[in-house]
Image (cartoon, rainbow, N blue to C red; front, side, top):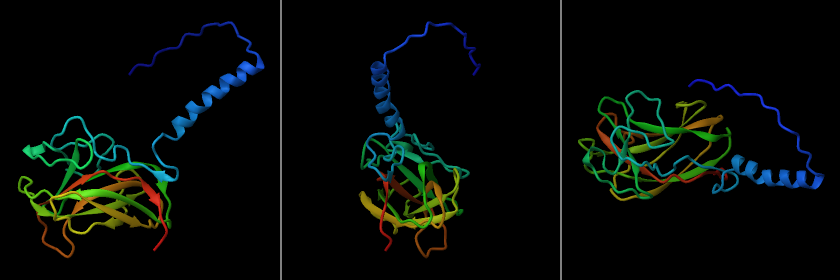
Amino acid sequence: MAERACKSTSKKRIHLPAMKKLCFLLLLLPVAAFQVAPSGTPPGTIAFRNPSFEDPRPRAAAFPQGWESHTPDCTPDIMPGAWGLHFAAFDGATCVGLVTREDGTSEDIGQLLSQPLQGGKCYTFSMYLSHGPRYVGYNQPCRLRVWGGSAQGGKQEILASSPLINHADWREYRFQFVPSKEVRFITLEAWYAPGVFVRYRGNILLDKCSVIENCDRA
């Protein structure tokens, strides 16, 4: 995009009385405060952008607004509607489906946090998980792994893991973890059943992430 040159213009200086200047500054303060701390997020918590994976156009091989992946060939599906499947979201209009593959690869989705998690501190958040019994051949149940990283797309440390998600209804799962070092990027990854070494085609559905908040170490 070409830069537009700014023309220098001379304007008469307006002298405001001291009281009017003070009122003018006070009017600006709430606006600045709103920009630094968006409304709706409780103090001391970290909110995901678009926590319920909402998107105006459900489709296959796409990311809902605010989410991304740096894993090759990672293309989550926005439900309902992708591949002709109609899994109703738990919260809002859309949710996300991730798959595992028989070649050992899997799909993930993540985002850069608004502020980092500190190493050695306890954190917790929850989300709703489900399984699609029929998912264009990727029909087996799998689990969710939560990764932490120091940069965009980073997957340096597994923070938490869900049990095997083999139910077709939405259920809430809470994750509690203590990072060993600073975490700036959270990744949610579909993964195989615990103790299974043969890779397979599976799926997991995600919806409604809560805020991340501090907790007491167990």
